[in-house]
Length: 371
Picture 1: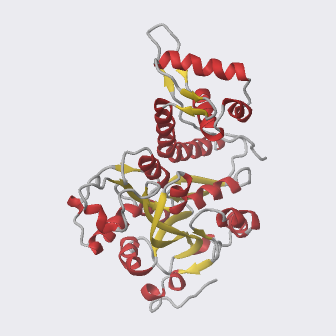
Picture 2: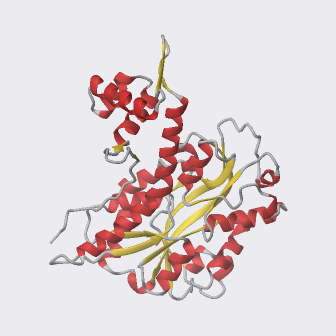
Picture 3: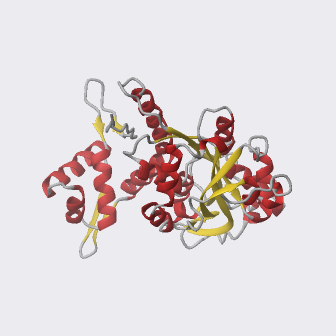
C-alpha cells in the first residue's frame, strides 16, 4: 500500500488582540505585500494572490488600522510602493522563513515517519541526515511521493556522520572545500570516515564566499576586512562546518576571532545569513552563492566546496539506494541543480571511494577508485 499524505509545518504570524478579542493571522496580508512589492501595483498583486481588488484593499485597510500606520505609498505616475513599515514586515518574514523552515521541515519529516509506522503497512524510508542546502532541498522535492521515500533530518556534518556510524541514518551529508582548506576540514571528519567502511555519493560542487549588500558599499573584499571596526559580521551556528571554515579562513588571513564584530551572532542556514544581511542587520557573512542571489546580494567567492553523501558499502545494492541514485542521475534533477547559482552538477550521482575522492589523504591506504 502507498500512503499519499505528506506532513508539512509552516511558521505563521499572528497579531494578538486584546483579551477576549480574536487574534489576527497575517499570512494573507504578508502574501499581498510581497506581491505588491514584486508587481509594483495592487491590480497585479490581486491577480497573483487570486483576490478581488475590493477584498485586497479590505485586508490592507484592516491591518493599517491595527498597526496604526500606512502600509502603502501611492505616488501619481509612479505606482504603488511599500511603506518603510511594510518593507520591514516583509524582511522580518523572510528572515523568519529562512531561519525556521529547515527546522520545521526536519520536524515534519520526523512526524511523518512516526505516523506511518502506525499505519497497517508502514513504509521503510531511507534516512538522510544532512545540513541544509539547496541541492539537498531539491532532492527531497524530487523524491516526494515516491516509495519507499527519503526521510530527512537536518543536522551538522559532524552530527550526520556520527549518526551514520551509530546506524541512525543511511546517508550522511558533509561538505569539504577544495584547495588549502581541504586537509583541516577532513581532519575534523576523520574520526567518523573510515575508508574501508564507507562509499561516497557526489552531490554537487558549490561556490562559497562572502555576502555583501548590493553594490558593496563597505568595499569588503576578503576575510581580512572582517577585522575592520565598521564591518558587522553574522556567523553560522556553533558546530556547523561553515563556522569551522570561517575560523580556518580567519586564521589564514591573520585575523583574531575577537577582532570580528558579530562573530558570536548566529544563524542556522545560508538563507538566514542572506536575510540577516539583506535586512541591514549585518554587513557580511559566509554562505553559498545561491542564497546571495535569491536575496539580491553581491557575492565574493572564496572557496569551492564538494558536497557528499557518505553511505555504508553494504547499503549500495539495496533497491531504495539504487532508486535514489537513479533520481540523482536523472535529467530532471540534474537540470534543476544546474540552474542553481554557483552550483556545478558535473559529477552529481557519481559513486567514489574515499581514496578516489581524497587521494592525497587516503590514496596510500586504500587503493580503490571510482565505482
